[in-house]
Amino acid sequence: MKKVGVGIVGCGKISGIYLKNITGLFDNMNLVGVCDLEADRAREAAEKYKTKVMSLEEILASPDIEIIVNLTTPAGHYPICKRILEAGKNAYVEKPLSISFEEGRELVELAKAKGLLLGCAPDTFMGAGIQTSARLIQDGIIGEVIGASAFMMCHGHESWHPDPEFYYQKGGGPMFDMGPYYLTALVSLMGSVKTVSGMTSISFPTRTITSEKKRGNVIQVEVPTHVCGMLRFANGAIGTIVTSFDVWGHNMPCIEIYGSRGSLVVPDPNGFGGEVKVKQYFSDQFEKVPLLTSYHMDSRGYGVSNMADCILQGKKEELQASGRRALHVLEIMHAVHTSSESGKAVDLTTACEKLTLL
Image (cartoon, rainbow, N blue to C red; front, side):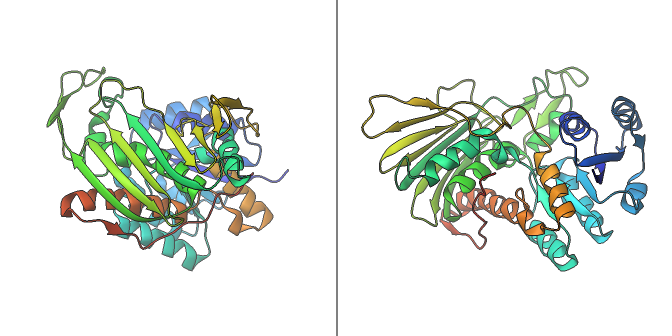
């Protein structure tokens, strides 16, 4: 079987599951090499996954690599993706697409101009949980969708992440860190968002790291850490989303979708599986629905595998975790913050394709 050569840029915490799945779960890719600013991390990854350490320049120039996966921190997403595309390679990047909406749009336009693929995490909407939920909605089980709610609330990452500073710097915060999972799920299930309103706050101006390596270091918080948004979808439905690094605990659902004939509980979009439950208008309680596809385990890298399939089959239009979808999500996130600053609703300029059932 022909395989697509892949290079990895960035061997931090998230890279482990990508490397594991690219070399083990999916059979349409060949891991050619890895690179990282920290030589030890690159060497450890290369040894564990039986590949070689390469410089960024070597990865960009390698004739054996067709897809470069950018797993750097958010500040590196735009400049490295731009170099990837300019080198004639297809790019797949961790979320968000870019810190800046304008730079994200530039990447989408650059990929289109060069005839290359640009993909962006999250790809969890391709998993069994969101796919099953989408099938229920498309089959009319809950009727016409009229609303939704989403909650991602915790007390930040400084208690467990070895390098948590970037979560509280420009490009970080709960909306830009975790919002992509929830917003990608919402637009995949309900379609594009048309108008956004938002309110934000910084509850704690500093954070003290309690994880090892940097224990006791104090982080100055630069971005809102409690973010609330209202979303009017193009189909008329209204959604609410709350993302927060300021909450010690809660009992709110991850995502619920409300329809004219029932309600749907959607599993955590930070995973591929989870429980899907539905309550129709004639039922007394929510009932669990069997998952419809096999990708219910941690399948991060599914979006990269799909990109590889698009290349192998010559069907670029079938890319699922596309830059266009990620750009729409990026604009929504910026609009929530812009609305909070201006006190006015923000009309969006982008849209995205509907979810394709796999």
